[in-house]
Image 1 (tube, rainbow, N blue to C red):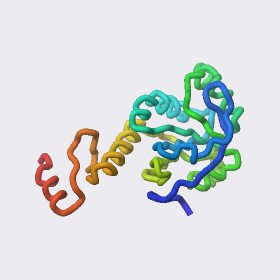
Image 2: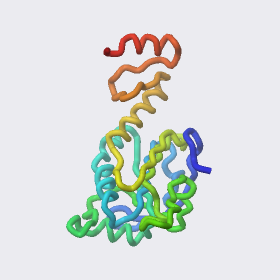
Image 3: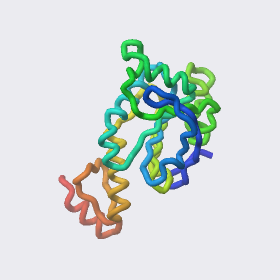
Length: 203
């Protein structure tokens, strides 16, 4: 069955690459106490994928400020990840500028556990991951799921907005309305709270 919101995130233990080295035995359990973005993507050496990796890597300081780390996951081997990490941008690589761990789900077990494995045999991306983003809280519960088809990249700004909203709601017991951004009004989730909020909405 596909994973759902508030479910304990399926654990994994994967090898991969980071920076200029291969890495081993990276487990979700290693990140208890932090918010984790699991960023599934179809393949190295493709087209939208490097733009997403650069975007989330460039947001490292903003993500660290909200106690969040990013783990990229695809079906590529650790050595394919490493060659992509080291290759120049002019060659379609990441230019040695990325610090996000890129993990290797060569068995596709993790993709399947998270419901992002592409079973459509008619396309070139068969047996690869869809663009799935899973936001996992410090207690290793899944709090946000976002999966789209492969033609459109994901938004770092929206990811950070959701993280901040969940953190605010958890801490204060209030809810964040549509299009909420940090500093906007929130309200207590009861009849009085929603009534007051709606009355004060701009017409």
